[in-house]
Length: 484
Image 1 (cartoon, rainbow, N blue to C red):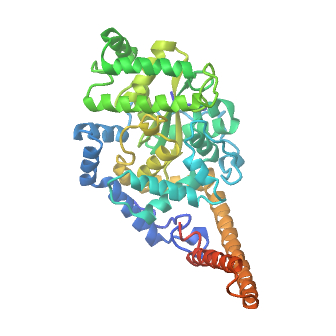
Image 2: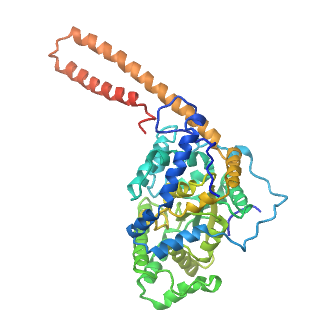
Image 3: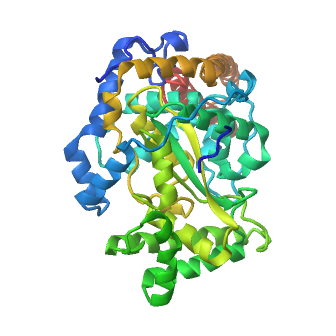
């Protein structure tokens, strides 16, 4: 259950928040005109809708075309049996200062598993430039698809500006389910997003599945996690047929799940082994930092995804239908070992206001949330961002409504304002540093004229400074923002 309280169209009149690839004096609202916004729409549409690219990606990830198509279809299904809820007269949205809370100045804690690359990038300065650059480079390094760097950069920045700050913090820290129960702001925002998503039958968005304690959202202890790893290994190796049957039956009666189980193919078994190896290494890394093995691990396991009908997609995951077999196997082992102590917590974390975000938002949340199996922090074992082309076919009226919603119910405007201010400070600081360096260079030249050129210490000092000055001049000439 989701946690909650109670014809092709381009929005060419809607401008992007800022162009991070050009050094411009324009305000953020005017930095990217409608023409460029249209080009970005087209670039991302090409990225997600190219059948040849999909086929190549399926081959690269050793996915059969049938499995790939099943995955794509699952994200596009719209339920006919989930009624649109009647508005609750007692329902009240969170205060605007919670919904519009800016990212700047928000405290973000380091992850105990060491997966802090994006947290560190965000903390480098007051802008999101370093974070966006890290995300773009990471995505480009892991895909065979042609990437429009400017389009991807602009879209990633826009999504970060739109994401509610309590949600973004929970995703980065890897403890979203825990924060749902322990932090009032996080709970308010997640309930609000679930309510807004449920209010419309077709509402494209990004969701998060997280394994956690039924009442607290906390993850397993180290001891419990090792028990799950052991059971998953036995299941995957198919050495204990009785155990395999018991695991398969955990959800069979409720969901009508096919009897093939969770490791039906060689690829599935390989991917499960890869996950178990990475997850085992990750929790042992946490254990090496004197973590009490009887205490819950501070970071959880997550799965992120896109759905054109988010409620339908989350319902399917809960039933283990067209779902993620590694996550399903993990959850089934938890139920078998610990009965009803843990559950799959489900959240809506982002609602789209542009069709191409179906691709880029899914990619971004997989990255910042460490959602892939690679580092043992997530369940995803296939590429993100491939299943979003039908979002471009939704009626334009929907996107107009969501654009208005985002302006009122997200921190977009405040984040853009903070970004503009921080970028201005950064540029002014660079100019001041360059002026100081020029004055110091003049002083050194005057002193050098008064001393013998053969003085080794002075010559070395001057040479080192001139090298630094040249580097600084280049840095400022290019512009710190433009260089990113």
